[in-house]
Image (cartoon, rainbow, N blue to C red; front, side, top):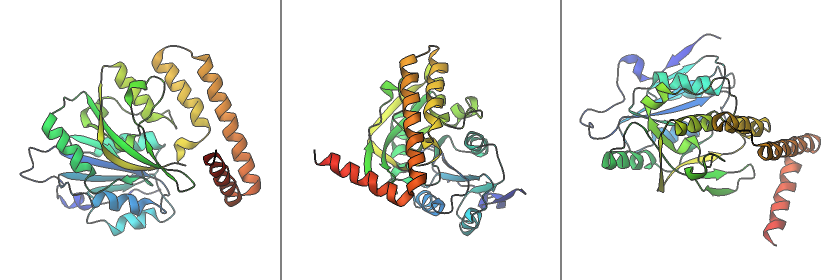
Length: 288
């Protein structure tokens, strides 16, 4: 596929504002492939941010569903976007980092969006007031939307990071230097963010929870929800911890099998009936 690119950066215009030296320059990166149903919501949530010292980069993996047409509609407001085939999400993340010019980076995937129009401003205010060093990863909360349309709050906490990844990368802001020096593992199709957090933790990175800031709204059902992801997640934990947790493997295999069985059942009866049954199940649980 031929490379297509756009954005006002191609005209020589910079996203970063003069006179904003006291605030960090922030780059938001969105990676997408065939996300026409949700990409505009993601783009608008970034462009509607009140914080002005912000660069926006979109990395598209060669979409064929109209995603590029939507990006073109915002050509004069997106800093830079590129559409070409790549090897997956990790490669797209790394490409976005290489293109970024900000001091700090937020990864906001297609189908996810900022909680409100002050989310980046709140993060920037924290950085301005506290001046964290280049070894600090900050994260806030996230609202999770499940496939039934229900909402819940992600109880993010890095203290149990060795056992689980309870915070999502959409709510993380971290120095670009860290991502330049510690790339996402392009061999991984799932849990690439969790793998990165574990590697950085092993190298002494400081994680700071911003408990009063809700950063993003995260929609489940993406690539990370694939049943194979639970096995990859166990493997990522094993590699980074240096130990083999057989009980964890047993749990992962059970979860994988259950997810595969649910997927098989859903294919037989169809999405609509399946979701109705799941909804009915949770309603019954809620009455107990």
